[in-house]
Length: 439
Ligand code: HEM
Image 1 (cartoon, rainbow, N blue to C red):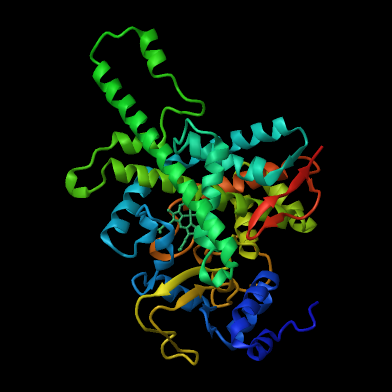
Image 2: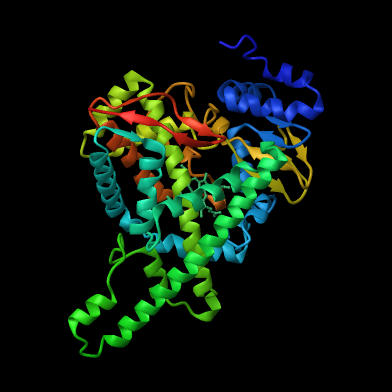
């Protein structure tokens, strides 16, 4: 037990201004739950010289509900391609998010779950009792889904993984409040830029080939073309299925006024990749470790994993991710002055241009919405979780993630005697290695 636990704010107040944020980051990395509890009880809005932290459930919701005040401006330099995620409450965000939500038809989910199950089983069977779960399972499964379900075929999965990795690290963990040394920060941004260029070239080629194929198919349809000729002409890439999201997008034509042309199809196809691999991998590996380290929970999880209805098992995974989320916060930058928690004792004026951390993990331990928050209770009210974000920027891939993550965890726990050699090894914020064995 840390002798100073419970006195985070006293230590913070004694710290010189220049190193206050560094200390806050240390608390968040090492003892987030104790630190957040003290913030909720004693200083729900913590104003550091470099950024402001918001710890209560109600205040986090207030922030995330106002995208034009608490903006995603910090995403802008990371997304030169004008992706919807970098837009706040405007026509492009509203239009493209809803089009993409329609493409990712929720009626597909049972098929996506079965696909995930099959991919997991095949990887684990081939692994023969030992695997480095981070690269070879937690990243490999979503990368395979990116090919089979989203349709990003004709490229190595390792390339997809690398592009997703640099986008995630640079966008989410190379921000001013991450205090990354300048040299390292530049290296990350350079790697991200190089990855974006390769991704752009690949997506252009993919979209062109796919549209030509579709066009050719429709031109050849009325002709009596020999079957063998057609078979060769339209030979499938490995992992290509008869229906994927990229093909769906290309088969849909919008009137000019909707402003969703082939260029927008490409940008959104790239977004599907970027959003999927690293988020899923980190959530999955952290949930697996959380359960493997707790024998009484593991026992309950294993029993639930064997049931036909996945509901009970999935609820265990969502509750585990409250304790080990992929990030304890979401960040925003204020576009104008704003008084948060108006009328309360902790009402605080946040000046325009401030970077603000919405401490979503803290909000998930606020007893305003979570009874007995320190206890692990599967089956809590799903609407209170922030695992997939909240408000207008809530995750586009939420429903895909909601079947993929628990199914991936389930298949690992179903391996007899599965155990970890040692804890997850990290490279900065990102998981790097987690070696598992089973009999
Ligand atoms: C499965 C495939 C996934 C795709 C295609 C995807 C895509 C996206 C996109 C496009 C956004 C931005 C939405 C917007 O700005 O309106 C987003 C936001 C978000 N996603 Fe995902 N995502 C996926 C999986 C995940 C997973 C597995 C997690 C976490 C376990 C996650 C967590 C989040 C969070 C927290 C946000 C909110 C970010 C913010 O508010 O700033 N996503 N996702």
